[in-house]
Length: 106
Image (cartoon, rainbow, N blue to C red):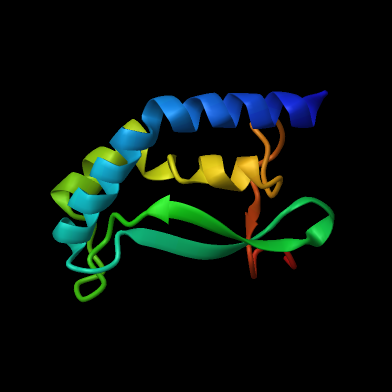
């Protein structure tokens, strides 16, 4: 039941927010002067590692959050690509947030 809820809601959200996600990605790519997607190793349920997707908000060279990146973080738009993690079953709308690899062992 929970998995069905995740898949249906993620599909609806991707259909409704897909264009916004593409626009945010393109602007982030221009703003950070690099590939606009941030991929980080996280630890999911039962200690299973997976890659989480986010829109990049920091410039690689300066390691500072850009003005646009700050807006994305405050509005949570940088987390839109995680809908694909939910769709593939790596994450869920309900439950604890996945730990960052390295913090899981502590």
